[in-house]
Amino acid sequence: MNKEQFLKQLEAFLKRLSLEERQDILQDYKEYYAMGIEKGKSEQEISASLGHPKQIAKELLASYHLDMVEQTTSSGNILRAVWAVIGLGFFNILIVLGPFCALAGVVISGWLASVAFILSPLGVLINLFLGQFRMSDMFFSLGLCGIGIFIAMGMLVATKSLTKGFIRYLKFNITFVKGGVKHE
Image 1: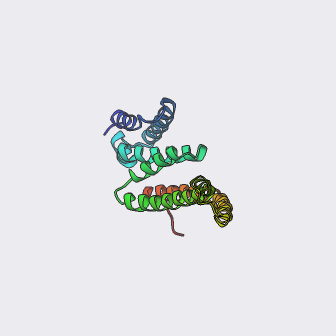
Image 2: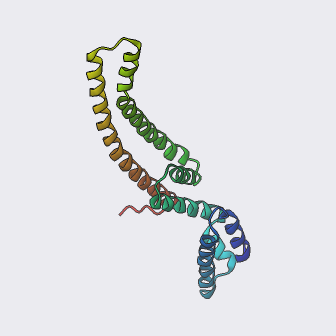
Image 3: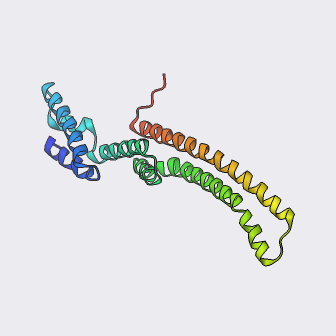
């Protein structure tokens, strides 16, 4: 594959990125070709040493989405980053999707428990209107509400920590897939 074919394929696979991002990436690869030609390599040799444009694009998209998560941590950005990292390889379905589902389950269940505990005094109000009010129910529901507030505070910290840890795990996974993990 020559330089033009390589760059056209790479640009096609990077179409989800902004025009500016694509141009920056393509300029880097044009410079790589220029340096290789100065060293006496043919365009085919340079293309072969770079790898397939589709795999390069997958790695670049995964890195791009992880950078987006670091800039703006939102559920949409996290899902796009997870999906991009899963796309790097078949085994990433198990290696990335499994921990992601487990962490998402823990976070969602923790938040649901805190909301349920905080809203427990509403049950006392319902009992009041039904004529089944007991003072002990009110104190118990207020205790649950307090516990729910503590759970919510803990979940806020846990959610931030788990998100940061999972982003680090995704970065490690990208480095591992690229073959960049070195054992010294």
